[in-house]
Amino acid sequence: MKKFTLHDLPREERPRERLKKVGVDNLSLAELLALVIEKGKKGENVLTIAQNLISHFGNLENIKKASIEELQQVKGIGFATACKLKAVFKLGEKAQVSSTEYGQKIESPKDVFSLLKNDLGDKKKEHFKILSLDSRNKLISIDDVSIGTINANLVHPREIFKTAIQHLAVSIILAHNHPSGDPEPSEDDLEITKRVVEAGKIIGIDVLDHIIITKTKFFSFKDEKLI
Image (cartoon, rainbow, N blue to C red; front, side):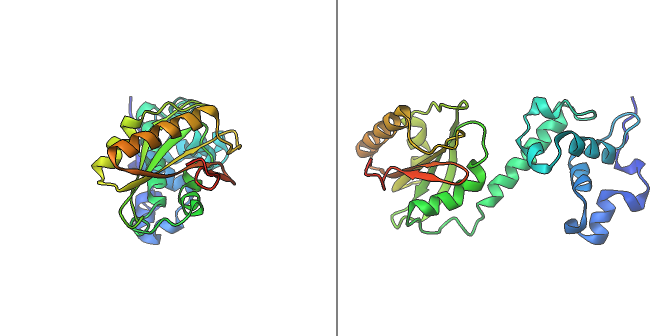
């Protein structure tokens, strides 16, 4: 079966040539998606498939949130292409915490909220992260520890401190999101926080705070004197 690629388009209409000529900032959403999709299917070039993707989901945010299975429901999007799209969006999320932000001093729960709200605010499942800090409370790294279900997150202290030890962290801050939009901690949240704090005392790594994040609000265990 012949696959229609970018080269099947007139040269002046190919996204790669247009990127070179006018710059990436001047490409349409369809052209940017076509560069990621790369290969078309019989009877449809990549720009058509990109337009199919936009029409199906309505906007880029919905494409980003879609699962691999949901992406594959669009004509012309196979498993490999769906994986590429998910990878591109994840790279974009990671780029939101730029290299200049590593090394910044974390002085308040609001600093953590500002760093993570765009990444965690719209997630459909709970994502548990750890912020590793040096002796001056400067950010060394932000790492994913686990991804839970829509209302629960299974995480063990060993995964948390394995990451902290690898980064030679002096202290850590825990953070996870509540897809429900309610930042109040659950019984599970209280229990895991207690266990991590106790483990940290044994290992010698301080747990400074645990921040629960929603799209617009956050809850700080330290502020509420729960740590």
